Image 1: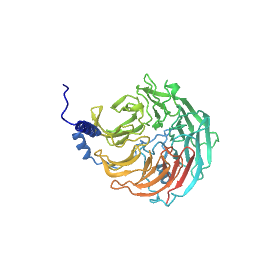
Image 2 (image 1 turned 180 degrees about the vertical axis):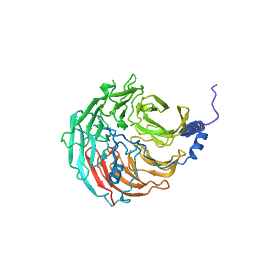
Image 3 (image 1 turned 90 degrees about the horizontal axis):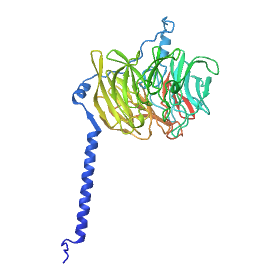
Image 4 (image 1 turned 90 degrees about the vertical axis):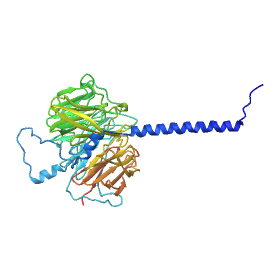
Amino acid sequence: MPIVSSRPRFGRIVDAIVVTLLIVVFAGLAVYHYRRLDHKYVNPELAHELRQQSLDEPKDQTPPKKPDNDTPKKLDAKEAAAASKDWPQWRGPNRDGILLDDTPMLTTWPSGGPPLLWKKDVGEGFASVVVVRDRVFTIFQDGPSESVVAWDVRSGQEIWRHSYDCAFKNDYGNGPRSTPSVDGDHIYTVGATGIMYCLKAFTDSPKGEVVWRKDLMADFSAETPKWAVAFSPLVEGERIFIMPGGPNGNALAALDKKTGATLWSKHDDLPSYSSPIAATIHERRQVLFLTGTRLVIVDPATGDELWRFPWPVENQTNIATPIVVKNYVYVSTSYGRGCAMVKIEKSGDGFTAKLVYKSRFMKNHMSTSVRHKNHIFGFDDTILKCMDLLTGDVVRGWEVHGFDKGSLLRVNDQLIIHGANGVVALADANPEEYVERGRFQFSAQKRACWSVPVVAHGRLYVRDERKLACYDLRR
């Protein structure tokens, strides 16, 4: 005789549903707690030490330059003041996205944005501009060519254009990514496929004047990265620091800025899309590279490794530039990686990197954050946020949507924000709350405005893949 359950079928179905729900709930709790534990790591001792620090405003990290003829040139007060307001390289005078300027500037913008001074058509690419003396420079793709162009600051009139055969195409945008560097009377550029030029910056020859040329991919046996060569060359003293990413000791290199000759090439790191910076840490000058797998710091003269910190990411897509604060270095990456604060300790002649904290928040994708005193302002993927630099905690309630994956810079105590959706805004660098002081729609090119805005001599420069515009910020 078959055994028949005394419990009704309906009751058994209910039991099954309850068991299933309990499994789902417990699984969800397990995932939540795992993610919460993995969300942030803090070294208690080092974190306590960091919280006792007094982080002063960023100071000029650029060592005094020696003239080519070794004869010191004395600048009068007017010349020195003008030079201090130039924007000569990637992310400004100190590569930190900060401009401290006593020029009286608008602290609120009228409806429609600040006054437009001029607008120019440009080609494809995401290079930012540099501004030195009375000229504006950038690089872009112009049909089948890459072009380095110089314009007059006041009128936007073209002064010279140097073009050469090169056409890089990609689903995420065509053209060069690297921002030029101006040092003295020369400009140094790197194209999307690694074609590098040294040109005379202040020539009046309509086609420009070439000093030297290098094919970095060929010279260092490297392959063009998937999303193009993107590092911006760093000029430090008599050397130019680059990241060609070649194998067999050709990952990082230093060139003679006068001739382009290779002074050293070392390491086997995979390339990234980040730009090198120079800084003085524990009273020693160092060059920092965020490669595709790690943060590696080298001696400028030899390329020898001084210290390292592992920082691998999917597809080597480290893009943002490291931020140096005294003897600490802050790094950030998207693709789920987040940020980390690293302390550099010195023992004898050696250096060691120790992790203070890491967080899954503040995932800088294409744009580096900027610092204001003890806080960091930047894009956590598509959300503009503020983070306490001393703790790694995101400021509660400080979340701003509506810019997509934007970029920003800091001018004195204010932020200028350029959204990938073409929105440009002015806001206070206030960690207590987000206070916006004006905005306008610069571009209709949605999700393609990836070039970092620039401020120099009281003027704001913003570009997309079709135009470059100059606005007057002077009060």
